[in-house]
Image (cartoon, rainbow, N blue to C red; front, side, top):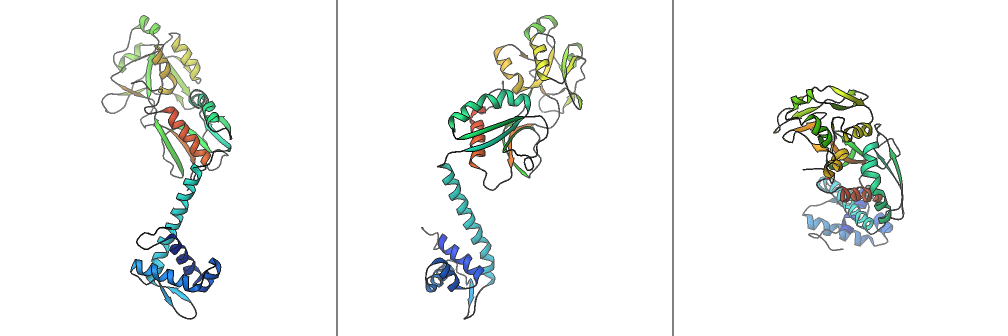
Length: 311
């Protein structure tokens, strides 16, 4: 292997072994070389560094202060080289075996499941298990390899690959707007028929802001509340009222003209914290090839900007 300023990977490996064994002869027997070769390699390393790394006597080889300091660097360099080798080797392999995916119900139905055929065709040796749930999933405790989630990323104990931010659109069907008109500012919503999602913590709050100002809660009178987003979406498409929904849920309907974005001068949200759409996986120095393959597949599928977003 080529050296860098006289330092080779073999020299680093010999150094670490001598540091642990405190003996040239022990390392020589283990490596199948002469003790003089090990000693000469260490001398060359010392010359390259300009530091004496070992005190030598007839009974043992003891690391100097510089030698003890260098041991950590040598170990790290060897580990990094091994990591790079594994990474490059993995790229020449094909993902195979079972990969377990988890996603929120509605998001999974609309934006994970439709791309599974392409994933399977690209990696025919991959077996896929998809679970859809809105429950909290701990990647360290659950038997799951990749978790697609929407929220604020605060836990540093796992890795996350962010695809983009979730936006909210205030929308209504053309039929509704023809009958009831279009709100011009958030305060106008008090006079409109609103369809509100109601989860376990209660009805969503509708928040608006303009030009990065503070979020302002706009109270609305709900004509319909439901814990089922599809039911609210169906009602909105029928012209029953106005909904505030994530872009990934209504973006395609807006593009088709079935729903119209309202209050274009305002940002809309249901909470003040930015929500990220991300793939989460257990903290690992070297993630499995199947995990990286799945995430890369969805990065390409979702695109930049995310394909469901409407400018």
